[in-house]
Length: 547
Image (cartoon, rainbow, N blue to C red; front, side):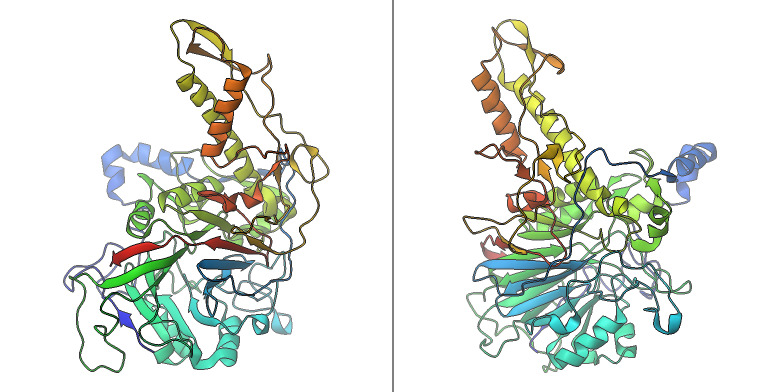
């Protein structure tokens, strides 16, 4: 296969910050890992206090303040999305099958096993967290368009040996496996030919053609970039952090003006370093981002590499972002308990390695994602409460943001000579309803597992509904603003609508509730899918891009 691989950004005599040794056989999180020097900077007692505050606690799980219908498993539709679009089908947990063109698909972190552990339970020997929900299909059901398999790290819930072996059996040498540094050896030991495995360090790139019989060397190429993540690795107690973890950017490009003839093929005997020069590519046709498993917070604030990803690759057409921790703690929920994270400003081992719902919203913003889909939840969990907890948090976070924006917008827009008291509009109060929807309003179930953003009539996944904008009442908090008189009701409604629109939460024209799960359909929106359901988005084309 025609390919081009860029070397690591660091020179041969400069060890990257995420390498824990000089041989590239141990790795670290350069932003999150606490250094011993911190104790000297703030004093030993304060250092102990900070570490103690960052320990999560547990309490008995209580009923959610709002009811959210858990995600369901639906039959997937692997039909192509059409020209100029990408289509992502959620396979559960962090697994996605993404059509980047009609005849080329990328498979991210596929897991089909019943347990995320060294054994699938054969011969009565069961190890690892068990699935709460089954996969939507089998490996045999995946389309023949699968050409690339991208793995984020080697934890059992992201690297499933039976799935890899079955993929290789079905697709053979038509597959290319993309893995972070140190993981190639595992694939070779599993019987995968070395020619099919591409191993990359952070910020390294791999450029390859779309492997279709109809395509020739002058047409599109897909470029994979191994990007940082904040996590760890290991499949036993003895190999912790000995292999790298990462996220993946996949971009589709037209050929540059001069064609692809300036690139080397794997059959060329000459090698050429491209580390210090720009590599010209043509118009970018699509860009997707799979974060892998990652945290967001560090002792010094948000991890800075997400903004770097956004600056280098944004806008991103579709991002797949984790909203929950791994399945290793699902036993806590199975006992009827809930893990309580420490307050903001005291990041814990969980929050630095796994993104929370609020972290996920920030990640999507930092990477400049046009549409974002939640992942890494609802699959390896211990209870329905845990399966729905991240979705409830997303809905409540968005509600708080709306209310804050409404009041800020009123304070900014209502300007006059005198100060008066103006009631800020609020959303109607949340009520617990047995229907599974917010505020007791429910619509019919969707007829299709596929949601196409580009169609006039979109199908939602029917998971959570938001109440419409309510009227101001005497119980609402009041704002002191500079105004000659109270704004007219029409002015308040206009401001409220503008605020909602800026947050992608505008009220539906017919008074129906806006679908919370389907918020990914809006520009800059974040939502989720049923397992097996698909999201189709139209891509933003960028002119000549250089790497």
